[in-house]
Length: 397
Image 1 (cartoon, rainbow, N blue to C red):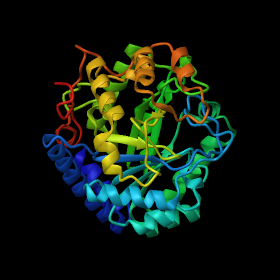
Image 2: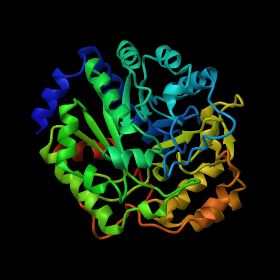
Image 3: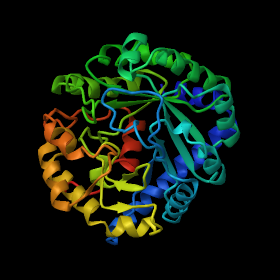
């Protein structure tokens, strides 16, 4: 299976894009992790990766989305994005997840990406704006991979995304990526309404036929102004997700990504272990995208390295999250998280002014932490990658 995947990666994407991916995402990410661990040993902190939500503007209204898309538009200026990227490079961090809203609606996105060809950018998009022209521009840049959200078949996807023709637009976007030989990913938030459709070999084979190179499975989080807790997975369904991912990695020539388990199957939270944090569209420095509270802001000119290193809020969050669960504290203990937010006097950065009320209304839901039911990786390649790229870094003792 590894040989089939290697053949796909060597023949389907543009060779220049593949070389950039191997160097800027592969080799430099290994160095970023090495430097991250080195900083931790010296008592300093700066994440290995950064996630930037560059705008709250979006053309869809998805159930369970935490972004405030109504009202005043917020977006990171090109100057702020440039400064954040430059500071990250000084700390050997060169991989960025670019989120929104819909990041392709930011008018200066590609100008910023062009100025930082020594970095690698993963653009999370709903696919509706992924036109042939946009795909062509991504190919010319060479340092970006589109990650297209697919939330089910046509009926389920359009229902989840709050619009008609969304699924069809996403498929057209994937076709444009294939035409321009991009390294392309698909992301799916697994919930009760789409688990049977998306957690299947049939779905993955369809993606392979469309020349999708990696699949990123997320777990649905019932948050935001329309949390839809009825869509949250049960503990048995979460176990089913983990089992499917481990088995599919041995069967199908597509990279399958998850952000929840290490090489031994132990659950972890990227924000708790400190490997990544998030900057919102107003510049607020947050633990992760769905936890919209902050005490620091990256738009005021203070070096990001200083904000990260001295932030008691982020440091105390990492400690609390790691001590509470190896899963997701937001899902399992929203009450404890609310108490923490109040105690830290963190600002509500939702743009709705209702973050604490939303936390108070949340019902605890199972997350990916399943003590005693761990499923280790079976593929040697994933064991190696997770052991060296993505593990606990001592956060859990």
